[in-house]
Image (cartoon, rainbow, N blue to C red; front, top):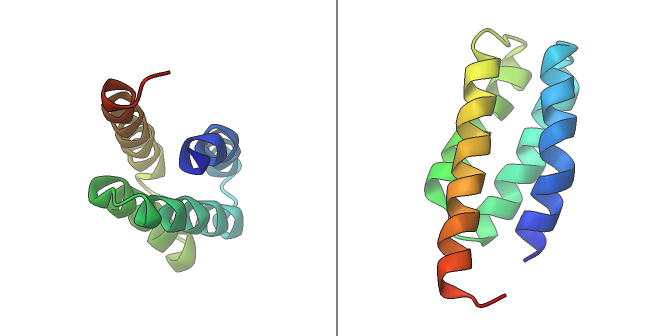
Length: 88
């Protein structure tokens, strides 16, 4: 799905933005992932992305690495769930 295609591209960019402490890019990228996850009906993924989006908006990236790992895990969990029901 488009969500997974976009996530593969955006997650590494988000990780780099976190490493560079670029709050604006963190907010923007997390917001984009959140929007895609919303259409995919993935509340835990939406919540994880929203947390990062809020951190970027507030300019406080303390805990962003942990939040990013949670987001990556949620995206992967969703991908595996879809792979179980949709044949390749």
